[in-house]
Amino acid sequence: MAKIFQVSARAGMARVVEPIARALLRVGVTPNVVTVTGTLGVLVGSIVLGARGHLVAGALVVAFFALTDMLDGTMARLRGGSSRFGAFLDSSMDRASDGAVFGAVAYWLATQGDHLGVAAALTCLVAGGLVSYVKARAEGLGMTCNVGVAERTERLLIVGVGALLTGLGLDWALITALWLLAAVSLFTVGQRMAHVYRQAQRAELGVDA
Image 1 (spheres, rainbow, N blue to C red):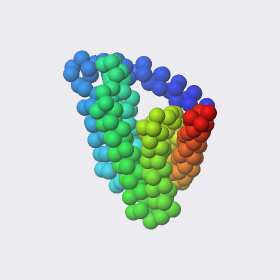
Image 2: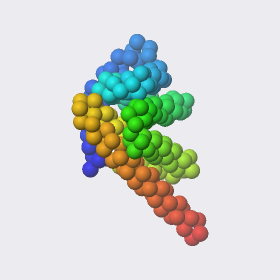
Image 3: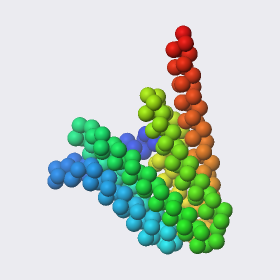
Image 4: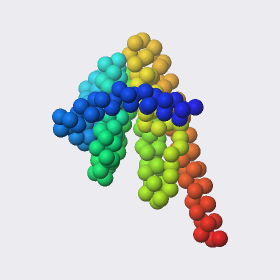
């Protein structure tokens, strides 16, 4: 169901994003420039706003600039595909953005004396990195790893909604979102490792045969 929702949402967003992508390409803006700009925007929203407790403004800024993740990909597709460096840059900037978001949340919770919240935020940060690493490592070994309920879009959406609701007065929302995200992220790591294990086992059996 999560995959169906994500595909439907991306299809709807594509109708909005594609004209913007075409316009940027016409004026000479490259996908790599959009990637870096989006990352800088997320850093500002996280560190300057979120870490200082401006949760509503921080969540909105991060959400806006996080959309560039779809924009740069669309631009690359319209140009005929992403370059190797473009793909490398995009993945690297995603990790920087994720670190800023969850690091800022952990910092703000620490200033509030919420040690359990800090633990949840750090768990999300580590588990989110593992989700991405397991997929990258599997693909580097020639296997697929397109499974999981908590990919990057879902992770940012969950923490963003939690931060927004807490900023609007629901104090429990961010902590609840973080623990939920920690659980589904760890579950996704397990899903991906099991998926890769089954592929490796089938490959070994095929070699033995």
